[in-house]
Image (cartoon, rainbow, N blue to C red; front, top):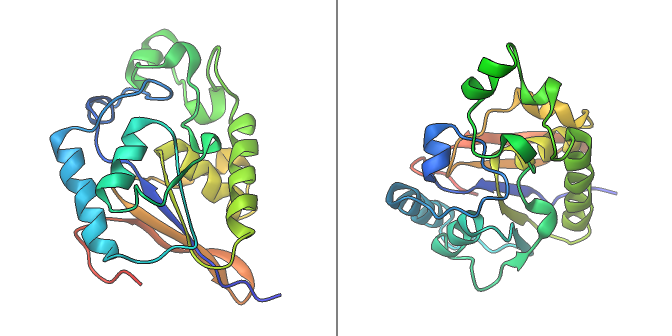
Length: 197
C-alpha cells in the first residue's frame, strides 16, 4: 500500500513559561502577544491549506494557536496531544532542577510524579494511528515534547529518541514517506519562511 498522507506538526506559540524555559505540561497558560502574532503567521504560511483532519491539544496555548492559524472551526480536541505531564517539575527550568540533581536530563532521568517518556510515547502512537487512518494530510497542533516524541515514534525510534529533535515555538514540521519509508520532510520551519505545500 502506497502511503501519501503527511502529518503537519505545529507547535504552539510562545508563552511566558516557554520564554523562560520552564517546563509547561498541564498548566494552561495563554500565548504572549508575540506568540499570538507568530500563530497568525502560521496561518499565512499555510495559506488555507486543506487538511483531511485537524487535531489540537485541549490546552489553550495549542487551541489558540490553531484558531489564530485559521483552523479553529475544523479542529477536533485530542487529549492524547496534551504535553508531557511533568509532575513535581512543572513550572521549573532544567537549570533549577539540576541544582538539586546534578546532570539531570528529562530524557534520561524522567520526572517525579508525572508521566514516563514511555507513557507519552503510548499517547503519541495512538495519535499516529488516528492520523494514518484517514486519507490526506493531517494537522496536529500541540506542544514541543509530545511532538518530538511523536516524531521518534513515527520513525520507529524509542520515545526517548525525541531528544534528537529540537522544536521551537510557533514552528512547523512535516512527517511523510519516501518510497514507503516514514521520514521527516521538513523540520522546525519558521512561519516567516515561504513554500508551504
